[in-house]
Length: 388
Image (cartoon, rainbow, N blue to C red; front, top):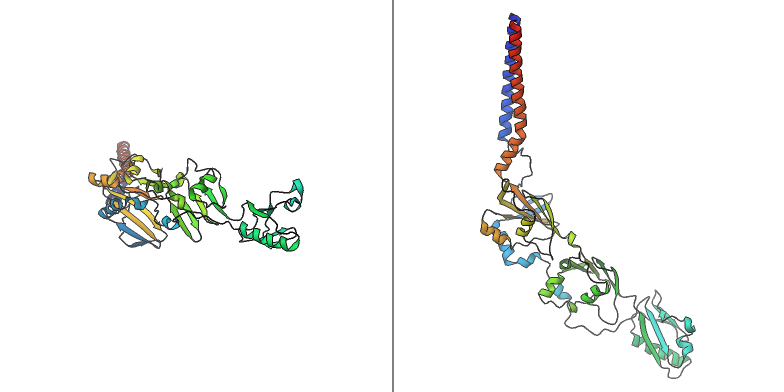
């Protein structure tokens, strides 16, 4: 019987020691609630801080609104640079012959020269890749850079010196293959568009490829010329009466029309539904984005902690902090124009963090409770049967 009492005392001492340890761990978990909270939290950076070698700039609420209200269109594609592409008037161009162009030469009253192959004669002769054209009795002529009129004068001179007296020569370009620009993206028939006698304007280039697809984002058309890239808001140009018919494409230009699916903003955090939202005609306000995502979670969102994170360039990230608790601030935030690839993040409230922490800890506490209860029942059973 004495041995049984000693064993029971040892069990009680063991339980007390372990219960004390468990209690200490439990309170440590409670005190570190924010650290162990089971959701992503926004760690607001200091202004001009660095993250992964990139400079991060924090813009307070007031500054964010000023940027949005004073230059609402600044987030949209700017036509300021595009204006330098516009010409004062559409010039009457003299087309200059290039490699692979088709040139037709007609010598009046001399069909043997005009069509020496008869009915098998194609509509013109192709300029070689090295820019030369062969014509009977005139020999090989380097025609690259010549206009049709200049080539006519050269042929007239050579034929007069060889076999004809005062020949009547006509020259025309029948195939334009040397001067071209490329149009790709969300157009019906992507491919090359060729420059001819008439100047190639932006609207005519889009018309030649069949026009825009329904999924095209006409507000972010990209024109690459040399080492510079211009962003063209096609619809915005119409609204601002920018004369795009005076924007002439040049040989080697690349025109790219992006898809609406590529122009998205991402809404994350304490919203009803994490969403990737397409810009509508290149425009989307912060309030539009939050509303489309179902709004803020009433019980968990911190309305004072709404952030817009923007990859401004390769070396800069801008973070805009908006306090949505103020209804007037939300009204002004409707003027905040988001840009493609912006990240809108709504942080969790402190109460939400605490509730989630308790939800995570509660199963562990219940397990400890039932373990202790089972231990007590076992001791009671052991004492009852031990006495017998």
